[in-house]
Amino acid sequence: MRYVLPPINAERVAEYIARRLRWYVREYAGKRAGVVGVSGGVDSAVVAFLTARALGPENTYCYVLPSFATPKEDVEDALRVIEALGLPDGNWEVISVDPILKSFEEVLGEMDRVARGNVMARIRMIILHEKAYAHNALVIGTGDKSELLLGYFTKYGDGGVDVLPIGGLYKTHVRQLARYLGVPERIVEKPSSPRLWPGQTAEGELGAPYELVDSVLYLRFEKWLPEERIAEELGVEVGVVKRILEMVKRSQHKRMMPEVFHVGQRDLGSDWRYPRQWF
Image 1 (cartoon, rainbow, N blue to C red):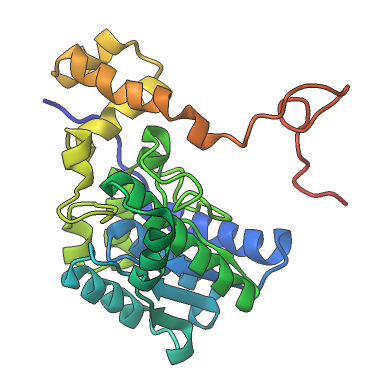
Image 2 (cartoon, rainbow, N blue to C red; image 1 turned 90 degrees about the vertical axis):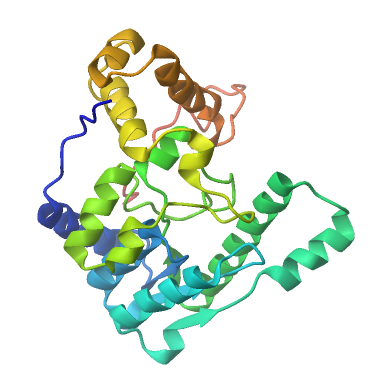
């Protein structure tokens, strides 16, 4: 098995994302600050570091939103990130989602673990958007390119953000950037997990290490190699490649705005390209 994803220039990438994020929040959106949900994982840690770099710690708000499925060490790691950023006391908070989840279950009845996990993700996003409104801020998303391509996020949950600064970086690149930014090594090396139910891990669900997943995605969507050639390049069975790419195909709806049916001469959606600036 071989991995072929080339490394990034972490310094240049960090400078670019911080500069672009500052412009997007301040100039394009006309907001003051950024709100980040910090989970104790590498993606949210990197986004929190980049947001503080772009907007300053005083304009960065971090919220830790644990549930019954969140290990104690994840909360501790999230608090380590907040401490490392030097956020003012009023700029962070730990809020359990369990009481809100319980109220949903009382109304909706018993849910399986996937449905409950999706509800938890959407509860978290409701909290983050309320905090963003209170602080004249945008919700800064923590999804990376690997997760976006695979559809490994909850629609209108962790996918319901205002901007995705690391959405152009594969998970492997995020870990590289994390080391450059000074994210604690235990967070960099921690197995990724949405923590929507106890024992959940991303690589366990994907059935392959992220280094392999990222190599498949890179060779298919940036080098446009066919499946058989990708399998040959990476030294894996073609079935492994097909399974990863099938996840991309099945999750296409997650990466798109709701379809607008064509009725008028020009309808929102495929007929309309939104201007970056209106005036």
